Length: 253
Image (cartoon, rainbow, N blue to C red; front, side, top):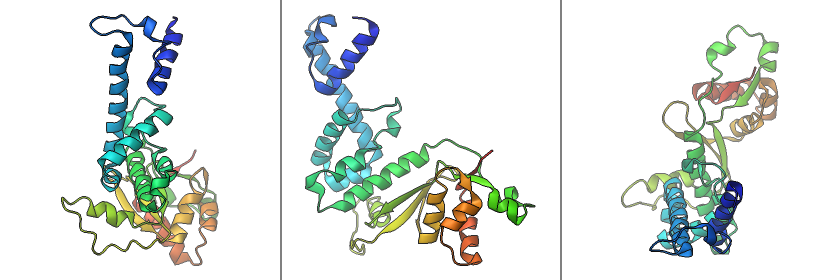
């Protein structure tokens, strides 16, 4: 086999488990070709399963170890990593869980998975320059309105219906206490960000979430402000102050 063919056959084996195309290329010793390959495939599945456990610790607790491990194995086989960094693995895991019929009556688990991967993505986002109060000093109203911006990569807006913040915080204790958590579904937007070295989370009202969603891609400060539906200068000022404080906006050239 050429190297590219060998690599493609090996990848295919890891996903399908069919060793027939690859086994002839494996040198046997105390184990034959299929047995040696099985060792590597087992390590492949275990290592990615452990990566998912690390990225979704509370989802793991909510599902239970057995269910999580089975779901993780099936997810790995259906959506293997596309990048070499395992700490980024699991972008599609929440959507995968959403489609499992066993979780149809437990949608809060899917919301938790979305929140937990947002934590992963925010923590590992690239550091980039931020719009600061100094950026805005001296700008005319026209210049402020036209200022090109984009939401910073470390800032994510997660739409959920479950009280994931309360659930996540409860699970940080050795013996979680859920007595005061209201599980009634309620649509809300959560901000997950990493303005400095530590992650931060908070609820967003409709205006703030609309502003940040409008700035997901490059736009202008005026356009994002218009889309947030703020009815008064005080509301818009509060949103801009939040964005400056938490470094939620990146300047565009």
